[in-house]
Length: 54
Image (cartoon, rainbow, N blue to C red):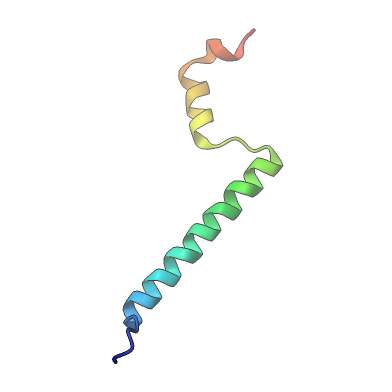
């Protein structure tokens, strides 16, 4: 029976995807913990300044 091994390119690609996803999770967690708002909030605030005034 032949062993089913992943090709080196597929292994490298999978590893890169896992590392990229882990990095994204870390960056998102750090932003949440530090209270930094993302760019989407800043853009929304610029487009509708009346929402920020009470």
